[in-house]
Length: 292
Image (cartoon, rainbow, N blue to C red; front, top):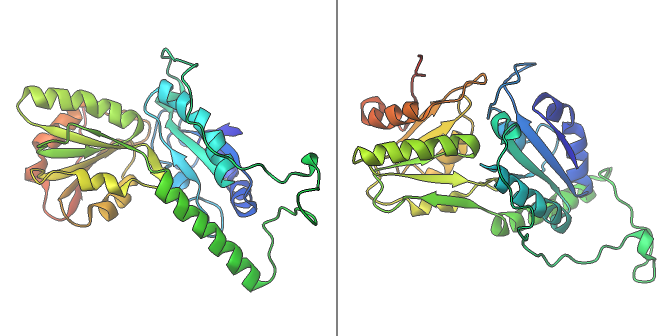
């Protein structure tokens, strides 16, 4: 396991690519702070691309989970090691600096999901059950051999996409608008949803828990009553790219984000919903940042 925040994770990208290529399991904790460059130490969600697209070389994926609470962080950490072991692939727990510094009560004894993980053919367990050397490497100098290795990796990633997609749906029935948010942004949006409900506006929420694989199936639950999607991030808009793919052009998409370590207030999300229709001019747009 390794952990860092933003700049530190950027420095580890070569090693992450090597581990994905060598099929070595590991757990990475990334606590996002403001950037680019040295940036600042305040909370951010501007490393979505870094986590889900990867900064290393080659055709590889890191499995990424984004908790919204300390309890969920602990629960995902327990699973992360088994998931990494099962798929022999890096798993990242991606949280922003607010969650990274938060204190909440936690049930440490909550049981984790049990997985059927096959025994490994490690040298320390003897060589009676296999022949030859078990060489772990990411170097394949023959192009066909490297292509076959990449095809095997892609087959594994397809299994991850089938089995490890996670999301949470909130108030989707008859929703007039649907917010898409993860991590701290989702917690803030919950308060905004309650305020809007008091005003007679029904707003649902899709909260992606797995950022890769991204929960495209969650968008199949959007009701016909929906007038549009509001993507909320503590960045200038990164997850919105995946939302546009999952949306398939069905609903107008709006974006509201704060960046540089600024954490949005619930009132800002309320205003973004209230002014949704006034702002939509194309399939998606960026709302002006509310300045106090």
